[in-house]
Every structure is written in structure tokens, then in C-alpha cells.
Amino acid sequence: MKTITFHLDFISPYAYLAFERLPATLQGCEVRVDYRPLLFAGLLKHHGQLGPAEIPAKRDWTYRQVQWLAHANGIALDLPAAHPFNPLALLRLALATVSEGDPSRETCAAIFAHVWRGGLDAADPQRIAELAQRLRPVRDPAGGEVKVELGRNTDDAIRQSIFGVPTFVIDDRQFWGFDSLPMLRAWLDGDAWFGSGAWEAPARTGIGAARRQT
Image 1 (cartoon, helix red, strand yellow):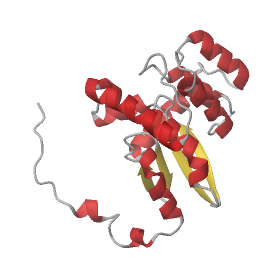
Image 2 (cartoon, one colour):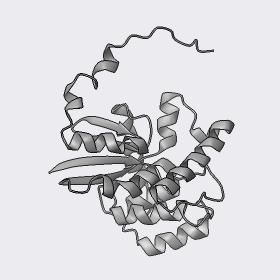
Image 3 (cartoon, rainbow, N blue to C red):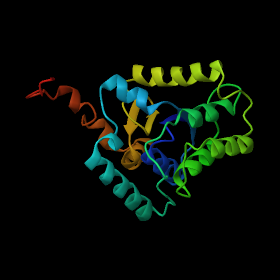
């Protein structure tokens, strides 16, 4: 059975949408999914990028688009009271629900719902404490072991040249974004396009001009 590694951060509305849509995308496929929390901000820092919510005009568009995508796909979504927020407590809580390895889909579903349903403050300490009571972590979410594990997940993603979330990795191929789900399914179905050379074409495409860094 093949395995998809789903790299995610609960701060990302696109990761939430992809999480909700994934079961329908994979219907009929014999595949396992590992849900891998990482710190999206760590990827941004490494690649020298701003997040969508850090660019004012892009922030407004992002929130409009994700609400439309949720509507168009029949997914419940409410913008949280404040965004972006610090997701560290939620990421660490997810990892702390298992003694080692990746959290379950059920755990991730509860945390995504905490952020993207109800329109409340995702970073509110009282709400996070109540969420932790429901999820019953087996390790201390604030403990050093969990912090190291989250850092390792992020560093491993950087080593794979992953630059955003959600990113799905299967057969050493990466599929980025909510809108990559049809492409991911096509790969699983053996679509002939993947043998046409189109996947490899970007590596053969030269850079005609480069923006100067100031």
C-alpha cells in the first residue's frame, strides 16, 4: 500500500480545505495517509517569503477565496476571530496525542475544527485548554520532546524543498495546495500525462530574467 505524507499547519485555510476534501479525492484508492504537522512560518523564513496574510491586499483576497472555495465544495468554514495567529500550541498538542509519530486524522479534524469552525479565537488559552482535555495528550505539549519533534518535522520538510502547506508527498513527488488534489488523484490513477515529460519540463526551462534583491 502506498503512503501519502500530508504536510500541514492548522493556521492554513488551504490545508483545512484539503483535509476536508481529501477523503473524496482518495475514494476507491488503497492508500495510507500520514498527517505531518510542521511550522509553516519556518518554511516561510527559510525561503525568504511572506505569508499570504502578511501582504494586506493578498490577505483580503485569500480570505475571500477560501470562503468561496468552502462554499463551492460544500465545506463548513468560518474565519477565526484573528488571523494569522501563533499556531505552536495547536501543533504541539497534535503531536502530543501520540507517544511517537504522526497524529491521527481524528485529532487533526478536531484541531482544524477548533480553528476554522465557529469564528472564535483559535489562540485563546482557555479554548486550547478545553481542546486538550478532549484530546487527552499522552505527552506534555509544552515538553522538550514535542518541541524537538515539531522542529524536526519542519526541518525535514525544508530538506525536501517543501515551501508551503498543504503539501502531499507520494513516490518522491510533491503536490502543493488545495487545488493540486485532482492532480494527486491523477497520479494515483496512472494518468499518462506524468510520462509525457511535462513533469520534468520545469527543470529544463531557463530563467530569462531575475529580479534584483535589495
